[in-house]
Image (cartoon, rainbow, N blue to C red; front, side):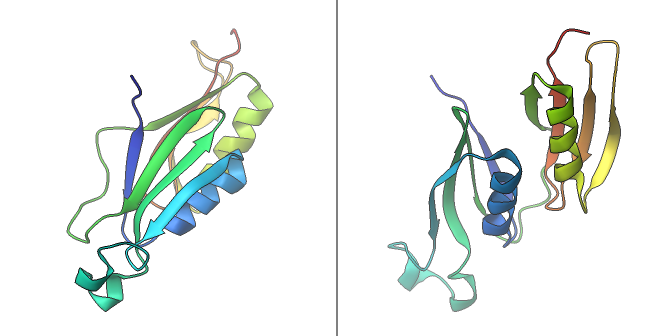
Length: 135
C-alpha cells in the first residue's frame, strides 16, 4: 500500500513543484498540462496551460498535485510533514519553504524535537518541519 498527498493549486502548480524541487531536490517524474492531454479539445483556451497532474519524487517519497478548478478553496485540515535528522538541514528547509509565506510556529527546539516549526508556503500549502534527532 502507498499513501500519497495530492495538492491542489489555482494555476501555480508548476511553479510550486519547481519551488519544492529547488529546496528538497528530487525529481519531477511527470507534469502534464491540459494542452498536452486528451482533454485539450474540451478545455477552455485560458485553462490549457494549467497542470492536469504532476508527480514528484524525493528520497523515495511521492508528492502529487494539479491545478484545481478555481471554485476549490484553500487547503485545510492537513499539513505536509517533513522529517529530517539534521537540525541545520531542517532549519534550511523551514526557512526556504516559509519565504514569502507565513509562519504559524517558528522553527525552534521543543520538548519533543530538537527543531520543529509550522508554516504556510507562498502557495498556501501548510507544512510541518520536524527534526527527528533525539532531544
